[in-house]
Amino acid sequence: MNERKDKFVLGIFFSFLAIFLYCSSILYSYFAIDMDIIANILIFLGIISLAIYLYFSFKIKKFKIWNIIILFIFFFLYLSYYFAFDKYVALRGFYGGREGLFVIFTYYLLFLLATMFKKSTERNFFLILITVLGIFNVIYGVLQVLDIYYIGSLPVARNWSVSSGFLFNPDFFGTFMVILVGLWLPKFLLSNKFKVLNLLILLIFVLGVFISGTMGSFLTLIFLFFLSIIYILYRRKAFNKKIILFKYFLVGISSFTIFILVSLITNDNLKDDVLNMGAEFSSVVTGDVKEEFGTGRIYIWKEALKYFPKYIYTGIGIDNFAYLGFDDNTFIYDSYLEDNVVYKAHNEFLQILVTEGIFTFIFYLIFLLLIIVISFKKLSNLSLNKENQILCLFFAFVGYLFQSIFNIRIILIAPIFFVLSGFLVADVTNEKE
View 1 (cartoon, rainbow, N blue to C red):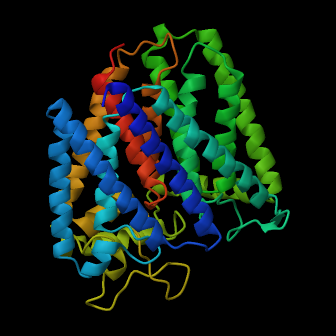
View 2 (cartoon, rainbow, N blue to C red; view 1 turned 180 degrees about the vertical axis):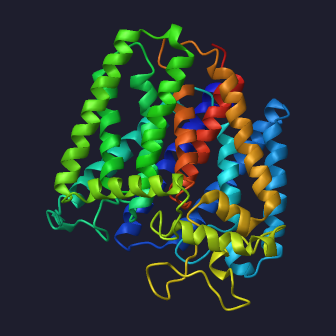
């Protein structure tokens, strides 16, 4: 195959992946499919991605550091499976999430294949596709928050007091919105051009963050805006100050207006959550940290760390978080719901540390930090004469990582993160500006 055909194959594969994840989320929302089926299909796609990647690797015959890092991650993941408290759960994932050994392998295989996909029309189509699918999610989420129960004869799936889109959980919906804000914020704010369409799309995903009602996503939104300001100050000579100030003023006023409208629609629930988050932050700064902070996350993290020394090397087992404390009959229970066992750490880094072990955790950090370092090197000399995907991919990357401090990983969203991470690596290591 020539390069054009290679890009076409990759475009078809990744577009199918995006459509599969979107359709799966819809079917799951309406209880027409379960996570076992979704996981099995995702694993099959992982096998296909491995075959395509090996073909490309033999074709270009070029060593990549990512291969070594991911092989180490695979090795320590296998050890975590081998020594797991419940090997079946480690292999297939805990019920309801199904993020087992083969699914996690698939994440990294998708990343590796994505590193082969250089900037092209086919790759742009994938980014446009997830944007359009994200907009559909926001529209559906608006219906949920407006208490519209039917679209014609089709019921609007809703299990929460806030919006979850087609992702059946506000936290997962908020995660998807954060990724999309990361993709579109630089297109508008970190460019000397003024494009109304880019502004509208950015505000749609800001709306998505607000209607999700999740404070982790809200904090990430603030973080991304703050990061954009730092980048502008760092590259201040490259920007037209008047245009940039006007853009920030416009986005700030628009975002505040959206916030007020969502607060009114939700009977001030959003405003109350933000005020409560601010009060908790003030308490943390003064040293008054309570277990119920972060809707019980402080309690969960504290309990998880208590068991970490016991499973330091290989963890209790992939996705075996629910079994922490089994031996001494002291399961980690939800701090609000009696007898509800917590099966995730609500922090991706802590989840990896206590379930997959310290070595997997270390190599995962190396994996992330290497991407950040090479991205910084590229961004420091990036030409801003045109809209640049590197900035967009980097903001989506760090946005996901920031929200992952407060959230859990899900197989309907994580593949998108790993694919975008692969695109970012492809750009910062191969693109010549």
